[in-house]
Image (cartoon, rainbow, N blue to C red):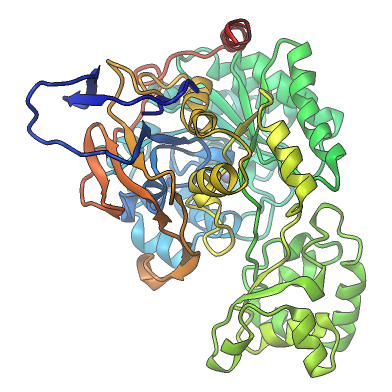
Length: 571
Ligand SMILES: [Zn+2]
């Protein structure tokens, strides 16, 4: 048993009754059902605080693939993109926005989600009884803004608008919303390619809304400031948000690269900046490489290359025409040369062909663009565009992941102990054609612990359980203890890891998504009920919709700091 606190493992029994752990150690009472865990680690269920399962919950209550990776509790509504509250008008807008900003297929959102609630409380009620893992949801700024301002949501808000948003946020938190989320990230565009509503907000509007959060027990803050390196104004805003609410703020996402250690240091200094002012700002960082599968059809990431925005915003047929023109190609190739933080995208010769969609291209899978270009006697950039154009821009490319070297892994292992960050940031449920960080729990246990020896299994389990539970104040979750919830993951430490990533066509309207099973995750219990049994999802839906104040306790800046000081003293 690894109980989530970080202390050494021990052997024992767990007794479960009425969703709770009722005994630990030697249990000799008769049981209706017994699970033999010999050879397995018994750990608290994993907690994933950054997901976008808000829509998927309607067509796939199991919230797959997360439970297959040991996850028993997820938080949605991140980055400003909750799908409640909803006005008569905002449903269509929110659907098209999610399709663009989080790459969820529009046809799946239309077909798989009823869009028939109004208030945040009604949305939560819709999910009650239908979900596998426990799920809590933040109230998203873009949803609030669209609800209140309608088609003016790309404009500055009037004092009346801010009052109306504050009232709506307050009502949503009272109904169980777990906190407030927002985004100013330049990459976040709506269905028409315009900035998402939260990006039109002033810092004052954002801080005003955070002040509302402070009036509600058991709430928290989540935010995306920018995609690049933080300016002082970003750090100041995050600190002000945390102070206004008197709650910790977590931001997404820190990428650690040993070639540019000063970048991680800069981003983490937002935590110091906050601490000096009595605020709490915590980075999320995935315990795995950020491998991004990208394609020219959705255009995500390509559209951030300097000088590419306009071409990538064209409708598909015009975009294909443009990408076939020699002049346009030369212009795009030249302007992509200095792409800063995303220069791995335009390292054309090292881009891997990940997935193809025409039989004639099948043999190109797994090869680099550089090899293909050499064979064809063309430039790497031309080879990439020719291939993509030959299959309607569907081709999935995998740029070489930044930071897959010894120095980077060493730096990660060091920084992961830092209390200015938290391991996480799976983004599960979003960017369905692009990322596989939904395996971050099994990647941590398999690759980082067993294969690379970067930390003990006990520490890794604490990262997946106690640490996120403490940040959010989740009651009775994150540890194995008498009186706690019987959310339990049983895994084989010798084989736990992510399975192979592949496209699976199981979304509503037949759309596809990246998917991976896990190895070694044997059983996952939520409230004592098996959600995964023998490595497979069951039909059970034992998850609770988590409501602020009832399922969470208040975590203030001071209480979090006190907890950290106490742990330091006892260590
Ligand atoms: Zn997100």
